[in-house]
Image (cartoon, rainbow, N blue to C red; front, side, top):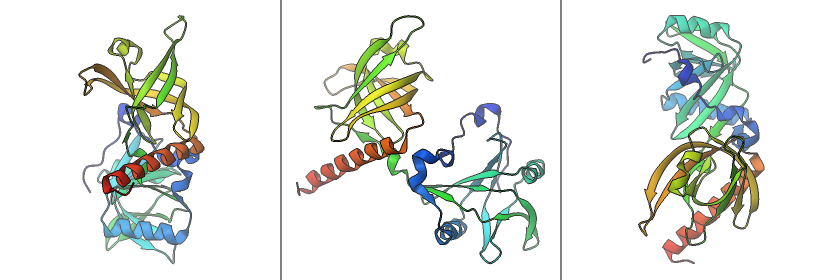
Length: 267
């Protein structure tokens, strides 16, 4: 395996596990043993690089699945290249594995590791996970929203003790992970990275108004087709409930289907 590292404090702050957001991603959770074994064997066949996190994401090592023993209900993984990290990993009761299988994110927990060997080489073994997240990133497909009849996002921002500033901003794009808002360039100081926008209201066509919490992740200036300058504010949903994610996905699917129908001449 390639070099194993200990995550720095800054790195660990950016580790995000959808597996831990069960209310949002429950529809992607596999509980069928047959399905889980199929995914694990596919990971072996595709030689998927797997990252194993522990100590709340502060430590990790790179590995790969090398065997699934259905009869013993065990999996075998390569050891990492850093034996100090390997020994730490053997001491913790729970670890979280993440990998990409054909561009699909895979995440599962392991209830502890044990030392093992495989073809004469040191390895790890663990129980086959009881659940596994297979996240096809359809919900993160970014849909450019219509500008002729834009979706509006109503927000309130506070600056210190001042009265809140209310704005109705048009959406530039939307996904299950967040939205891109179009704001006047003069408001850039209001949208510093990390700013939280609580209880924003999105008016989703044919779905209704939903309330969401947003975190500003990036901002940059854009020039529209008419030459006007605007500020694009990239925001991530915070703890988006599953039913609201479903409404957003339904809207994205419907608009994309209508767009494809127009291009095909079947509308």
